[in-house]
Amino acid sequence: MNPIKDRKNDTSNSDQETVSRVFGAENRTRLLKGYFDGIDSINPKNTWQHVYRLLLWIDRTTALAHCYESDKAQPGRAWYGRSLAFHDWVSKTLDIHPAKLGEEIDWLFREAVKDLASKAVASRTSAYMEQRLPYEGRGFPEPGEDPELVGIIKEILEPWMDRKPPEEELRKLTRRIHLYMNQENKRRNLVGEGFEDVIAEIISRLPVLQTLETRNRVPLHELPGFHAPPPNEKAKKVDLALIAQNRRTLVSVKWSIRADREEQFQSDFEAYARLESAGQDFAYTLITNEFDAARLKAAGERRRQNALLFTHVVHINPEGVLAAYGDASRGAAKEVPTHISDGRLLSLNAWLSFLASR
Image (cartoon, rainbow, N blue to C red; front, side, top):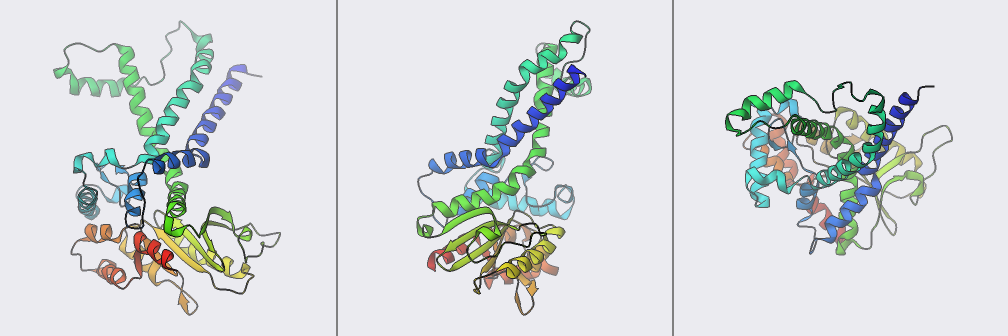
C-alpha cells in the first residue's frame, strides 16, 4: 500500500468531482437562474441575444467571436474573413465595441470558471501540503513553474519593468496562465448541455409560452405517447421536449453539426417513430448555431421517406450567417439565403413566435 499514491488518487478524484459539480446541471441551473433573474424582461425578439451573451465565446487563436472550427479560421484562410465579418455583425447588433465583445459574451462559462478556480484552490491546499511534506527542503519544483514561459514574459516585459518580480510572483503568473489555458478544454463540456439548458430556460420564462411543459434530457418513454424500448435496447434521450395538450415537439439541440450528428438525426427520428404509441404526429425540430452552409442546407433538405426529416430547422440568428458569408455566390452559400427567405431556416425568435401562436 502506498499512502502517497493513494492520496494522489484521492486528490485526482476530488478534482474531477469538483469539475463535474462546477460544470454540472445543478450549478448551471443556479447560474442561469441568477442571470435571468437579473433581466427586466424576456420576449421572443431578444432571446437570441441572451443565447449569445451566455454561450458565444471568443476564439483565443483568432481573438474573434467563434463561428467555425478554429483550425480553419486562422488568418489567411477563408473562415478568418468570415469570422471578422461575424464579429463585426455581433458587435454592431449587440451595440458593443469590437474590442470589448469578449467582456459581454460567454457569461455562463466565465461564471463557471470562477466557481472552478475558487473550489480548486480550496480543495487542494491541505492535500497539496501533505503530499509535498516528505520532500520538504529538497528544492522540488513548485506547481506552475515554467522557466521557458517565464523567459518569454521577461524578454517581452523587461524593458518596461522598473524592478525584477520575485520568483514566487512569476510562479503565480505562470500558474494563472496555465489554468487559463486549461479552462478552455472544459468549454465543450459546458456548451453541449449548457445550450440545451439555455433554450429550456428561455422557453420556460417566456410569458407567451407558459402553457408548454418543457423537459430537457428526458428519456423518450417518459414522455406521453411513447413506448419504453425493448429490454435489450438502450433508452433514447431527447435533448428537449415541449408538451402542450396533445402536441409534442421533440427537439435536437446542437451548437454545431458534425458529420456523426447528421447520421444521428436520422437514427433518432427512426427510434422516435418506432416507439410512438399514441398514433399521433409529433414535431421534430433542430436548433443549432452551425455556420457551415453545406451542413445547414443538408439539415433543411434531409428527408425521411416522402417528407422532410425536420419540421423546423432553427438557427440562433440566420442574419449572422448571412453576415459571415457576405456576397458569396457559390455552392451551398448561394442557397442559404433562399432557405432563410422561404422560412426553411428559421431564426430562434421566429420559431418561438410560431410556438406562441399555436
